[in-house]
Length: 101
Image 1 (cartoon, rainbow, N blue to C red):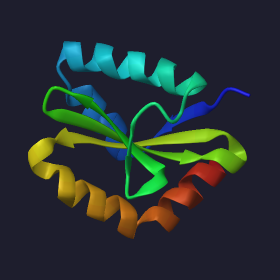
Image 2: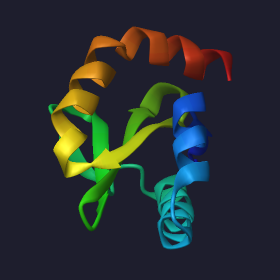
Image 3: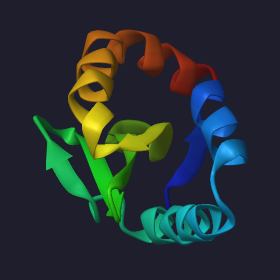
């Protein structure tokens, strides 16, 4: 069963601010994740992953039990640890977002 892709408001705002090439890459990643949610590199957990584009990364969460993926953030390597920490600390909030989607 293909996965459905959802975005946080934060990711949507970041997407709008991306350069055109970054948006095109993000769109390709969305299509790839529908069929293969584990395409990215795992971050601490099997359900938390990133996809890399140059020095930027898309961060996303996989919800196997409901076949949904939540695109959470996009940022540079410099901000990577701060983004990872924020996502892990707020994983329950993200779960509520995806369950209501």
